[in-house]
Length: 357
Ligand SMILES: *Cc1c(COP(=O)(O)O)cnc(C)c1O
View 1 (spheres, helix red, strand yellow):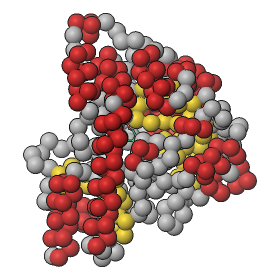
View 2 (tube, protein in one colour; view 1 turned 45 degrees about the vertical axis):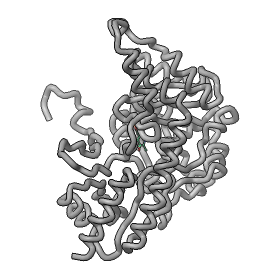
View 3 (cartoon, protein in one colour; view 1 turned 120 degrees about the vertical axis):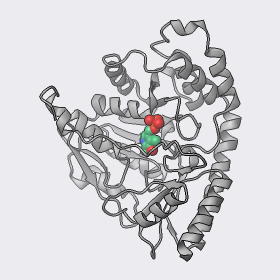
């Protein structure tokens, strides 16, 4: 605290990202990055964009990128909003759409940035408990549950559980709450869940947020987007243009367009991650782990005979980093990013050794 700070700053509990250690030969399975690099066409586009034009500001409306995303999602460009990572898109959604008198509902176990944004924007958040087996219970989000909510947000698949909600269930929640915005954070949707993008033309209150960080292997480029009705997109634009006119720089736009357009590379690499995930899930189960069904590029698993924190520490001693959350209900779990086959093999070997000790 300092007397120079705006008072709200002292009250914030900032998000703590997974670490990015600079160690050699590390098996880094802690932040859900894609194990393969981005498409070669992305790298080519980035190199081509590295020229004298960088002296100019980028297009504040990111027209080319919004058109590419619109074509891919089969919506109009006016239904697309882009931002500097989906975290920024989500932040704008909290400020533009989710700050109302009623509480904002989200699961008790979910992306830990949601309560952080509630703190930043002074929004009353209300955590809704997942079921015993870590599923979202649709019933809890129907107005009949009597919560008089001002908004709803959840990831699908959820993080860090990896569990997906069927599209029909997502639609029930959206349809039952026509008077409040419902934001579906689809950061991991390409690894096995059904996207709600196809519903936006029918539901004015639905905003679907996606990112190029995970399934397009571009966490370093910082591009995310939202698809929604024109009224919702207009609210996001108003906030964005009151904050930063140029969130997508020239390189980011060039790379992101190439990534969206290279559907062949996208398909091949996401299928490879899904296949490796299924193999790894089987191997962990053979080692005695309970593994939640995952529709994401990570697994959420616990071992009945070994403490979660101790396992994470033992892996770290072997230069393998996974994510462990010191949080009620999930402190026995490890969240393990699906790496390359080689990385996963090293993980399984290390776990064999640790469990045999
Ligand atoms: C990774 C992640 C994001 C944000 O990703 P960006 O890199 O900011 O696009 C958003 N939501 C969830 C649930 C995530 O796991």
